[in-house]
Length: 594
Image: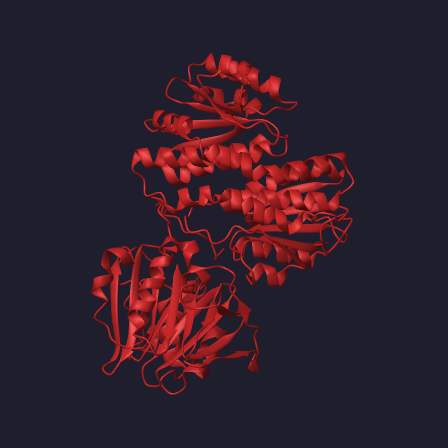
């Protein structure tokens, strides 16, 4: 779900709808727009995307308004449940991201007081609660009172007809204010408003702000406060398809640049002994790596890399499943991975680690995001904005950031020297894969008819297999399991037959012989085997049905190259199957609620 607001001198509808189109990948069950005009608050709602139905809203007139694109949580997909929602008087309209944990209790109370609800959502409670607290007379005061009663994460924008005011607030859910000349923009993330602004303010938890043409006034805990203004480093061109059929394909092809730019954050320049220090603790006694989804797979890879180099306990954990027993105590380092910097479960887990005495590092792609304000230190990935729901360049950038972390923690180890050299040549090797996709496209056409598949690997390839399987599930709707090759015999072998293809990741490492044995065992059960292996690997070619070649590389760089192949293969499989690649069903780009 994503909400937006505008107050300024322009007609608001084109600004709001254009901004919503740029973040439709964040939620696309329905959308709605509300504007203040001379008749009051005019509103249009529609099922589907802005692109499909924007003409329904283009007649609205006014220079102050709010809009929203929804990803259904509480209440089904219907026009009644689409945002914005209004109070009983028609003077207050709201759009909301997040969850109101106590909405049932509040709704029952408000209904007993005579309020009439028109939706099944938790969000509508906000409009009626503001009305009940005197919103028609003083919007800011009423919103402050309402927020004290609301439990759960939220970002809300409130439109007021009598005063023509726009009030916004946030708690544990992202909200950014864009500052223009004589106009102010409200958005859940920066890409929505990139064409219009160069300066932004990130609201803090508990902030309430009154937005006007001249800027914002912010309060927290009843006191007026000042928030820093940040310059935006991204450009509007970065959120266009630039001639590609899909954002996912464009972002896969942007990975050489993302690798180069991220590596530049931590690699020493010519003549320097080491990169700039970036850690809140130089010699941790243990490392805890936290992430969700794709970011968790990066953490799993980091667990192996750091364990092999540091000789201390390193543990990767799914952030949403972090329990008390995971904590080592003071002297330990917690590293949290989040592309958006707003992943609720990851932020919660990092906060718990900090409360247990951990020092903390965030690895994220978004400056000023919530996780950067929580962590003691931040290492930024330089992937640029990522529009497709399926993460590609963000994952690869997180892996590069992990290698930078390893270099910083173990700069004198022999393995570190190899990583440093290989990182500099990695962009060109990825570029070689991107320039020769014919074999990958052919393999994808062969996979498209199947309904189930395995990706198997050993060592550093196992997190890559899991990440590749996630991509096939996300964009191609092909049920795929990423598995350690040695574990197939402990149950999954029962699934193998001619209707269950297997992709095998063969590295040039200590696991190579066992991987070749696994391929032979798999082939004996009937599946087609597609191997991803070093170029000119004749031995693997003798066992597999198809070999996708990758440039020969260091053992630590092979996971990146294998990842790019799996990204492309999932993309081409999805294209062959006619799937909505950039907008997979039921998914949103970032999960900002628990």
